[in-house]
Image (tube, rainbow, N blue to C red; front, side):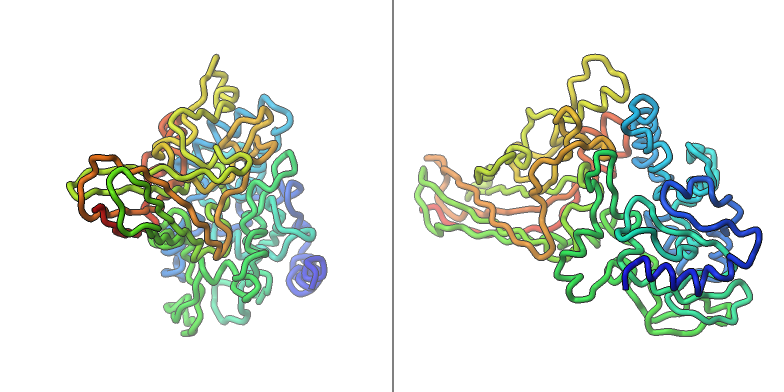
Length: 456
């Protein structure tokens, strides 16, 4: 059923109650929703936690609840997006727009820009319980740029209806059981009309989507339990766990990209050539790796050999020769992110190390975001073009070769070669320059594999 028809059904079933109440505003979506719903239309998360103890505790640990208070999100908004919106008309909309997904209660209340997290306002609730459970659908044919429709009331939206709970009723809403529900914030078009976030769109093309696996199956897996055991809730076999675990969860990252390594020559002589082949696979994700804020994510493949006497040798990836490949091979000399200097009015700003701490010559799986001057940027709202998309699609495998000319004096004996896939949520040079806590840019090992060949 097209989304427009879904909305008609939802308004007849759900919205009819709201329309019958004179005080209830007409639900609107996207930019039009700015200032349409005061804070007091939404219950605080602490209210929900009184009954939904486990679910609330899970949500409190997730990035959903920290979408506004998270240190990098605060720095990115107040030190980059907000000042940029005030000096460049093309991107003026990010002043309000960032908050449509990161501080939706503040956006709906018209509290823009929201107070800093240190001030403890309701903006700090981020993507709150009552916000999600008040969404009845979305506007248009494609979910993106916070085009969700919010209709807060005493009736909460859920995946199943019917309750004798004294706190609220629940209206079964099939929209919450779709990936489009997630897409309202996990798809984003920037002022140039580019899909700078497209996680839901990527999922649509995935084997997982074709198999009927939705976002919630991985990020909100069902488990046996009771959503409100102290309030007479029912034991069920499929309570959605509100984990929302993703890029900030080491366990979720582990094995998301698999790597296997072999040598084409199993016995070689000193001074001869050996070719190592690393196969990398997006083995878990139903979207690209990296996805979402791909402009700031770094996924790379590092290969290192240890000879028979413990000497260590870093192997550089072989070039494939495609256009723009230099963006995908780490360089200690390459500079980027010059628009940070433009935004912060730093005279003669030289840029920052494009690849941060990634070792020179390692393969990087990325999609470069380019500003209007053609320079790499971490400001997704300032993206006028893309470089080559060298990310990993769902279940996609890529072979990377590493040709090593052995030293003539390499010791005879076994050589162990190890391939490691690393992940960083934010390029380290940007994190260091902007004072982002180091855990945001630390390298997390995703997978590793070793093999052996012999020097004779």
